[in-house]
Amino acid sequence: MSAKIALLSTDFDGTLVSRASDPVFDRDCMELIRELQDDGAVWAINTGRSVGLLEEGLEDFSFPVQPDFILTSERDVFRPSGSGWEPFGDWNARCAQAHAELFDSASSILAEVIDFVGRKTKARVIYEAAGPAGESANADPPGHD
Picture 1 (cartoon, rainbow, N blue to C red):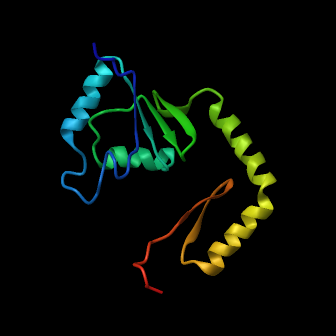
Picture 2: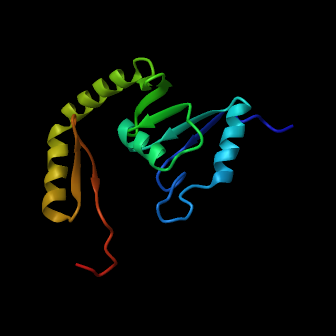
């Protein structure tokens, strides 16, 4: 007896869609996701994108299937509502508070990391409203200065 799939969790960029391929997403995969949802599975997209950027991606690629949940910025959880996406309970607020406390307690170390990235690498720090959120860098081939 095979187990019924209850939860399907996927990334978006590079997993569900790829601008480097044609077509940008696999229609058979989308149909399988739809069938799993019809059979009761919950589908969540986990992404580093914000809600707005994910909505743009779903629209730009004319996505044929709607996820049940989206997890954005690698931590916030949203569910569909009649007018877009709404936070799922108080998770996002509690998560933001915990992140603020963590960043506050690690501010001196974080400042050193940001300084190092700025002085010693070609990477750039990415900032969101609450502060630094990541970095972006291109890998150079070995031996390339």
